[in-house]
Picture 1 (cartoon, rainbow, N blue to C red):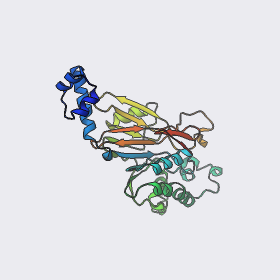
Picture 2 (cartoon, rainbow, N blue to C red; picture 1 turned 90 degrees about the horizontal axis):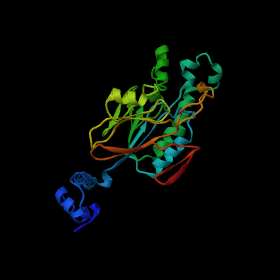
Picture 3 (spheres, helix red, strand yellow; picture 1 turned 135 degrees about the vertical axis):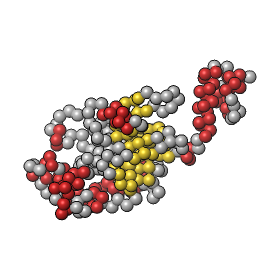
Picture 4 (tube, rainbow, N blue to C red; picture 1 turned 180 degrees about the vertical axis):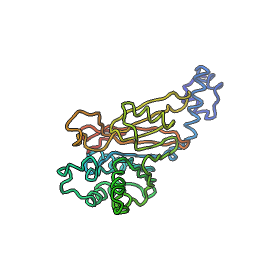
Length: 290
């Protein structure tokens, strides 16, 4: 009796490698791999797979169509995890870099910035998320600008920080350099911005690590045992204007992306970083436009 591997497992779900070799004629090595693979398929119920979305470096009010496309994708899917991965706000109006550049801060107001972010970014995301979606707010280096302002003027404490000026109800607040771990995935805003920052991240944290901060896509894969997930450091692109003022029209490696990940019950995962070009991208066969 000769049959394909899929036919063999369809007829005999508990098939072992010796009988699989007899039924299909494949080698012992291949039979061992196929048995392991099909056992994994049998153990996973599609309903047990969780969907997550993470977006960072929005830099409000300099966001672009990446934010709108991300919201559309969430609206089309039941999202179990949602991460705002740092630098949600630019806060250039209180940046020390702009202290002597009043023209760049003309008519800008901190409260107006927070109100706009709540109205234009946070509330629309919340409106398309399920009520039971697990949500995280990661503090990026730009949000820390509010803390630097308080250090200079302690009288402002409690009045200018994002956590005090926005309605973050339902979000787990992750402080600067904090780590979110979901299954075998870990998420940080990011600290390093050297040429090989993805490699530096995975060497530092020693785990599957996803970061933002550098506004570009970079992946570094470390050696890992056979038949396990490749251990990777992944830098995800940004969701903001690709030509910020401080770049002075210089070329950059900035990429517009957000992160989609599927989490299996055992903590393993699959991820995608769709790249938005000219305000559009295809995800799962569907065209999204911003």
